[in-house]
Image (cartoon, rainbow, N blue to C red):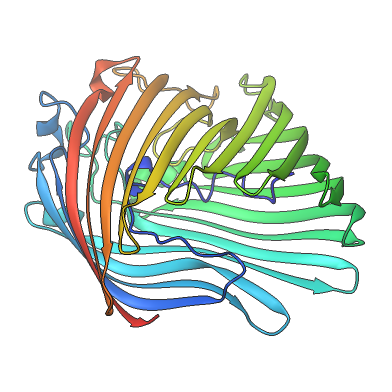
Length: 407
């Protein structure tokens, strides 16, 4: 069982996942970095729309964004528990579209400790930033709503009780929510609670095998029709297996049945299957690669759908040219089906029912002997959907400069 991360609350837009200058670290080594970063990016299609629709946003089509920020990376033993993760706080400044200027807060932190016979793993995910444009939210007249900051957060606690090797009981709880700052988009704000229980087996020569059942309750607190809130419940029944295959290969596979129902019988129930697959490999002394795939349901913050059925496929590599130069590349494909309830139907003029998003990215990172790090990156993004209103493509390119106070 993957420790509870599947509420959808922590998911970040694809365009935030490109080419960051990450340097390989031994997971057992203590690491702490604190520094400042300036990310300067050119975006050829800041509106995430076709040329014919861009005028509805009242924005310039292309832009240069300056992103100064303070960041932290940690993987450290703090006397009884280990803290892992990263966080950053900054501000986005747009050269052409000041309406999109906003704060940018990102954090992903997890801790590991042991109390008596139980492994305890608290964690949090947090994201606050300007919305990703591209979906139809009409304000005054026919113009798009664009001045909107989205906050997505999740807080979780997972337990595994038993001997270090052998059988163990599993349990977990998480709370997540997504919020829009613009009043016209708060119709899609949601809250979600997830509970998990299961049984696992762990042994170095076998790997980790988990069986579990979970329940996730999602509520759209601002969608009320005739006194009824738009909401749904998901039960998952699954199993996962993870192990190291030699010193150079690590794999994980998970499969689960999905039973989704709407307690108020709003006509959007779903029964199906989901999965999660991760494979990472060290291909020689300088090259690493990974493959990922997954399918699941999750809540929606960007439009009026009740939930999405999302399928992802991705892969990437990194190549160390030297101790100071790393090249990397990645590809991600996202396929989404948007499911609406009887209480909240899709836009009549241009309904969004499904879309496909492809993202290609590459980077070159340079680390000097001193406190400076430098990277260049670029990529291409393409979206197609059931309605050409939502189709777009565009490319981005940027430069990042980092200065480390603590390393």
